[in-house]
Image (cartoon, rainbow, N blue to C red; front, side, top):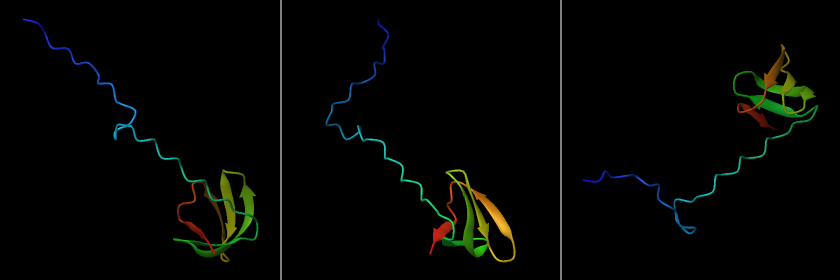
Length: 76
């Protein structure tokens, strides 16, 4: 009796299983004096930008440093 060996199947070039990996959306860039809104802190103004790392935002009552990714920020 021979044992069964699982051999990985070769996928054809037009196979629906060969879907390309989605390209990530470009990170939104912010500049000094941009008006933004944050889900937790509210309305604010960008007062400092650390390229691709963090933003310093003045929310009126306090200043907050928010690191990337900026998922809770929306530019107005």
